[in-house]
Image (cartoon, rainbow, N blue to C red):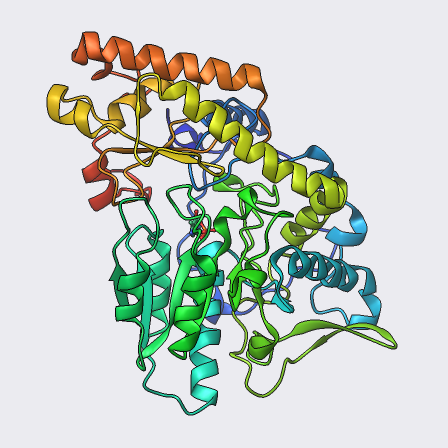
Length: 479
Ligand SMILES: *Cc1c(COP(=O)(O)O)cnc(C)c1O
């Protein structure tokens, strides 16, 4: 498919923008471009068709099943978009004085209150723009906590080897030293190893619960106690809250802070449709370090206030991705207290149903009941027949199914990580199981059969290593 630049015809244009009705202002010669701006010249219908064609090549939750493990690709209710499009929310300037934007501040305050209730936290910042950004903010809070007590030697952060790649990456960005602890054969934290690792140099532990293998950390109270006894704090990667929201609260498990991926658990669009939001909740002993400003309710209404002189400062402009928070609030209010619990139950039920169907052929990496997602391993098939997790993932595309997450978590060889979410019905899960199983059987019979998949897409198997190592993502005219 040609780029807009390649479709450009000199002189072609569209009348999207009417003539300017105010006096033109030039910033002066000094700031003027020396060369003309290279922009494609196209008619409005050319542009419209171009983007429609791109859209048809993409796969979203509205196109079909999207079981991308860890990412919680659930349906994004249309009503949330409608609310986020209302002029009272869209046409507000973030620098308007607080007393002229009370409704928007109330949205932030309400969303914060509900998210605190769901997580069991005392305070929250809605500034972080993604889960990874929330992690960075939370670890910065933990660092500031130790610093405020003059406890400067705590620079070690313990992270299980099953963790999401963003965990060590974001913590390292705050200057932490990362220490991995291994996972036990049952897929959970090894508390003996944790005890050995925790000590006077430990700033904290970063843990996902349910963990990235889709398993609940049953020893969570013991785990958080080990870290607290060693003087550290415990961070919860809340990306998997979809399994437990309304059912169990990380705040009650001993976690000191948590990020939520509003674009996962709380149904705001993500992927190419971003932006996201990584709300960061904390217990009261960390509140004074939260990014500034926080939303407070006073006698005269809502206002933006500094959490105090020990705040880590801003992590994002203005109030974060306000409309994303608004959509998440709309989702929470639509579900209500009972709906939130039901959502978590259905997410777990759907995952277990699909896991059971797939286990007819596939090896479940950690057998037993799962939470909202599960991990399959193609290790045996890869070793014996050369059929890899990637082959299965590619073949699913020809069935109209987005591939599951592959090769994550890193501790499972040839991993396929499947998360159906609660928004899929039984028929879709049965259809998906049919596709997974027929692909498997065809591959075992003839391993070559899956090597050419997908055959229904414009490009079958791009050279992924070259694409990652040498990405060509910029258009250079004439090349
Ligand atoms: C998605 C995810 C993250 C990172 O969140 P982003 O919003 O993509 O930055 C962290 N941990 C886990 C377990 C995740 O699934």
